[in-house]
Every structure is written in structure tokens, then in C-alpha cells.
Amino acid sequence: MLGKFILLFLVWIGLTNSLDLQELSVGFVLSLGVAYFFGGNETLHLGTVIIKYLKFAPTFIKALIQANIEVAKIVLTPGLPINPGIVKLKTTLKNDYDKLILANAITLTPGTITIDLRGEDIYIHVLNLKTTDKEMLQKEIIDSFEVL
Image 1 (cartoon, one colour):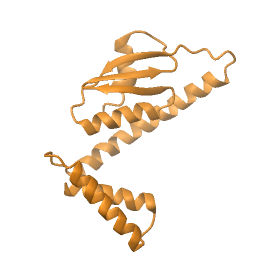
Image 2 (image 1 turned 120 degrees about the vertical axis):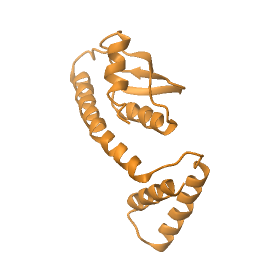
Image 3 (image 1 turned 90 degrees about the horizontal axis):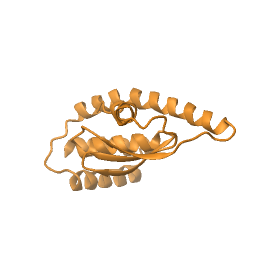
Image 4 (image 1 turned 180 degrees about the vertical axis):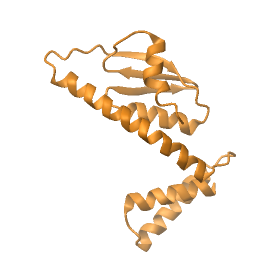
């Protein structure tokens, strides 16, 4: 719980960009409350979490840039040659937090939106399905992000 509190409080300070006593007090109380509520029985090692997500960041940024270029090409092409669809893929991630990060990363990437997350199944709306091969989609969408 302490690791979650510290991480949340540091994020609060970074987002508010203020060291005002009132801002810090509100952030302290909110961070403590969220860390307590979502503390659970699992141990969170702050260093491990930071390293894990720092490894994830370049992968996400690369996918974000590639997806933006792809969507820009679609938008700038007359007739909008798209083939939208919904796919059901599987994740090997076990931690709920990691699954949530994966689902949000997929949604933040232009051209894809996570519709539902049930157990290990992820339902994703894809703007332009280039293939119906489930293994290829699994590799392109899920496996590329599963460095968590």
C-alpha cells in the first residue's frame, strides 16, 4: 500500500505542478484513500513497477506514432478505404492493473478502441482490419503491447 500511495502522490504533484500546502494536502488525502481502497493483499514494489512501465513506454509511443500515421493516411485518402470490425483477442497478462493498462493503451492508439475486457478476452473495435487472421491480429495488437 505504501508504494501505491507514494506513486499516486508523486503523480498528483506532477499533474498539479504545485507545492502549495492546500494542493499537497488534498493530494495526500486522495492518494492515501485510493491506495487504501485499492491496496488489496498484493505487494507493490515501487521500483519494479516504475521499471516495468518505463520499459512499456517506448513500445507504446512507437505504436502510437505508427497508428497516427496510418489513420492520417486513411483520412487523407479520398473515399476512406476502411474495413472496420470487432475482434476478440486473448491476453496472457494476469494482473488486473496490467490488463487495464493494456486496454487503455489499445484505446489510446488511433484506429482501435477496447470495447470490453472479460478475463483474458479483450474485444477491440478496429478501424481498418487488414486481415481476418486471428494470429496476425493477436501479434499486431496484443503481443506488441504485452511487455508489461
